[in-house]
Image (cartoon, rainbow, N blue to C red):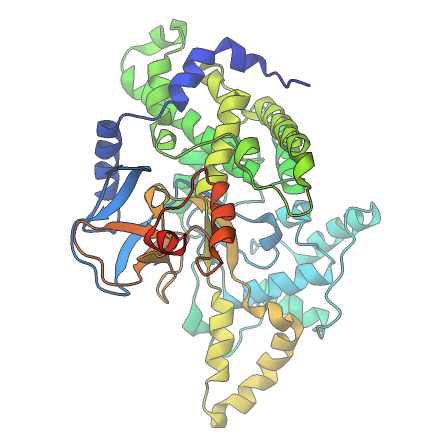
Length: 485
């Protein structure tokens, strides 16, 4: 059965123009401007003989030297990670305090909140003026309605409820926790209970770039908060890659509005009567146009439990899933002047861009650092301190060290081509405590040399590597692969 989206037929020419790869000169100019804003001296993006574009060294790099710190175009924390880690929704650094991070996690576990039960984490239980009792009664109502079925892990030793609440409410201070201070929590400007920030600047940046259209609070600029909530629930139940696609569409719509306001500044109401300006949409889309794309249902890896004979059926199911997600998003944030963005072709290519170019978003937990610090205390101090900290560590179990986890698209990192013998890798140093991508040299890199990373486990046998790389749409011809053929 053919899946049809009316916008695809109505705006086929405009959609094709948006998906057409930009010319090399435009790509080079764009990335030169972007590099000027990044912590990455000595890099250049330019065409490569075989793979479109690549990142090249403009200076010599030593082994373990920082090559690039890249800010994401769009990223999201996995919904299943939100019980464990409370982070800034824009830069993804941890917020609040060590006590709040621990108390919140144990409090939610004691209430039986599942990592996938995001609706219950939207309660305003992170603000100082919200009482535990109010949240507790609200959650109990939801438990009675069958919305939650999980319970704390059996291999953990539970803390008394009053201790958990004291940590959660900030009434209890752990020894030496002041050495691991975190930025205070800033609430969402739109009043939703899903996004929190480390600073007013992060809150404003997220609002202006993405969140004003994707907020479910009273201040949301979406067409319908109810429709938006349905979209979010569908994404959390199926694939949270749809949340990233929604961020890209929101980002482009908001850029389009700003560009339009800037272009027509001083022209007043004359703007309202104008027809859709597709050149303006193309300019708003430019940051997204730089990413390599394929339709998601064409490039998603076939799961191990799906037989090859069922591949066509599987890919059709993925296309249907994407269409359902798109229809829900359209009801929530549709913009008449940006209609091509709501075509299935554009939506599928946005999701495919994330599927092919995503880098894991990882931020190490300060809670782990705290307990490691306690463990390294001199024996003369450690015994007394552990009378307080050991029961808490026992209650957390192995989960004490869980880091912030998500996925993101990084414009410059995504330009780095693959090699099974890479000269660089994504690696978080001790000082890297936010969601930026950090690329480190694995070996000395000479000026003029292409900087490569590995998209897969390069230690796998040749045939397995080639099979995995086929999902990216190419057959690797690096020096290692040539040696093994």
